[in-house]
Image (cartoon, rainbow, N blue to C red; front, side, top):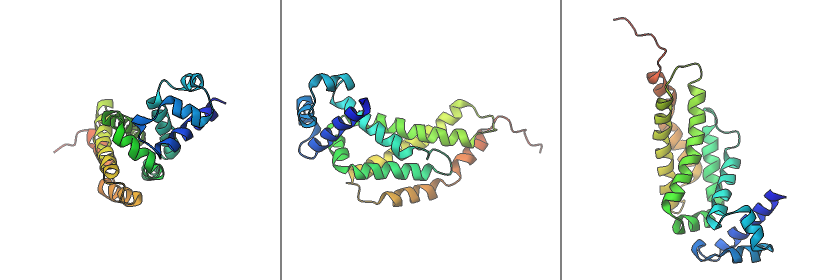
Length: 191
């Protein structure tokens, strides 16, 4: 029952975001639209921003689902961009009226989780320091999030498939190559 209520609150928020900016929406607005009382809202969420974060995390989980491998990361990232595009009024409103730092930190978490899974898979059977894996994931995380933020800022004009295709061409094979260079279990060659 809890997820049903959360989804209903999310739907109400998204409906309200079509009419006014997030900073003008109150919890009372959401609960009236949803047909629940304030206590029900506070049982599930601390504030409107917690509802926004939950909504984005749920969308990201659904978009990534089983697309977190080296062979499927492109589909996972495409699904994330498609979900963003499908919720364009919601995303644009949140982007314009919520702390940019909060949005960036959220995107970093989602993208990092995707990338670290890919890196762990590619590093299977290799001895690579955790800090090297983290460095590689961070490097790509900043690139992916930067591209996503620029895309949102430019009103999502470029089709998501084009972004993912260009990104895929650009980094094709780079993660395994970088991991290979970081390997600790490769014997030194004799010269």
